[in-house]
Image (cartoon, rainbow, N blue to C red; front, side, top):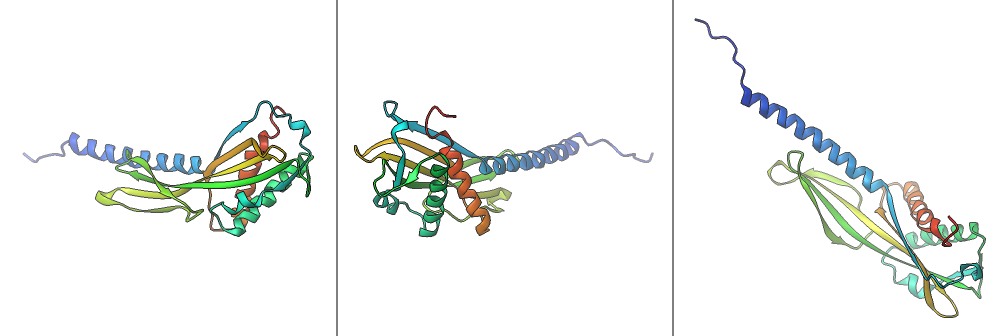
Length: 201
C-alpha cells in the first residue's frame, strides 16, 4: 500500500510559531521607531513666581558652557530658544529679567529581539550620536542601538539667581542629515517650551 502524505502537526506548529515570531519582531521594531520619533516633555516651575513680570532675557554663558555637546549644536539650540521666547513677547536684553541656561544628558538604548519576543535595556552614553544601528547578536538575536537624550532648559530669575522654570524634552536625538538635525532640535525646543509661561496653554 502506497503511503500518502501525513499531517505533521509538530512541523506545522514550528512553522506557525516562527511566522508569529517574525511578525512580533516587526511590530516591536515599529513600536521602537515610533517611540524614538516622539518627544516626552516634563515641566516644573516656582508657583510663587509672577511670570508676567518677566519681559526680557539673556543667555547664561557659564551654565551653557557646561553643556556636553558641540558648539554647533549649542548655537542651534540657543537660536531655537531665542525664537520661541521672542514669539512669546519677550525681548533680548543686556539687563534681562531672566537668564536662560541649558544642559543635556543622554543614554544608549540597546534592544535585543530573540525570536520576536526579546527584551531591552539601557547603557550609559554622553554624546548626541551616533544614530540607529542594527545587527545580528548572539544566538541569532537581533540587536538595535540608539541614543536617547534629554535637553533641559532652565529659566533663572536674574535678581534672585533662583531657578523659576525648567522644561525637559526626552527623545531620539541624532540624524545623519544636517537639515533634519536642525529641524529635530527646533522640535525639541518648541515642544519643551510650549508650556512656558505656565497657565497660558
